[in-house]
Image (cartoon, rainbow, N blue to C red):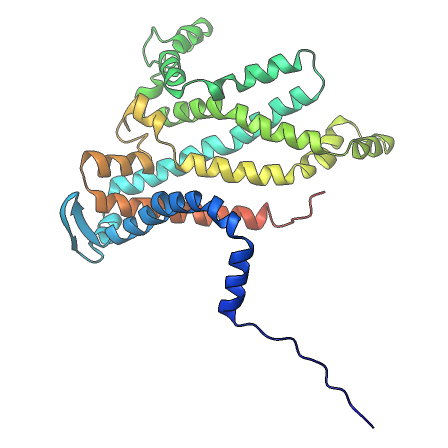
Length: 309
């Protein structure tokens, strides 16, 4: 009885396999090299440096001085920082759901076959391509907290007293959220419109054959099939809401009484006004961890099913 020994393939070392893959894809790596260098210089290096600064004192001039957890401990005693975090959370509540809802409504209007759909699409998207400074200036004029403010002028016709709007601690943040919704809703509309266009028309036909009315078609077919769009828009609007800065900077300077001081605005104030770069780095990491945790929660409960179609 004879036996044959199968030839075992020559096993290459790890370094040999890496070298072979590198030589095979060398052109790809050469093309990607500028992007990789840019990513390291402008993303990785600042991320690592800011973490290093959280344990040091540094005023730009001179060498950083190691202080351990001094700045992290200062965060827990900083009432303004916690108010800024809470303001940012409130802004997100005012902003995320209305932005997603308005974007979906606008997309449904465009997708419904309404006349002059192209015109309305451009009209709804116009705030997105308009300078934020211009829009903020118009918004500030509309919601001026005096009797000559345009919105106060209009509500005066129905007997409502003039409102303080951006001069009010309870109203200012809502006004800023309205500005951001107006600015971003057109982008959200485009995302939802793309999702609506990708839904198989046969699903609608089957639903109508089964006797579903328009509301049931929307709730049982359209809304669930837009799940990947819901997930993407929820992530982007959440990140955007926690990074809000420009409207507070342009219109309220964080006031009144810190009512519109968001975490990014406070970070900017600490880093570039007070030159407390180390403490600003701590605030940036707080912001990073908040966004990371919320994004993971959204991924678990909104984006957990990868098989959408």
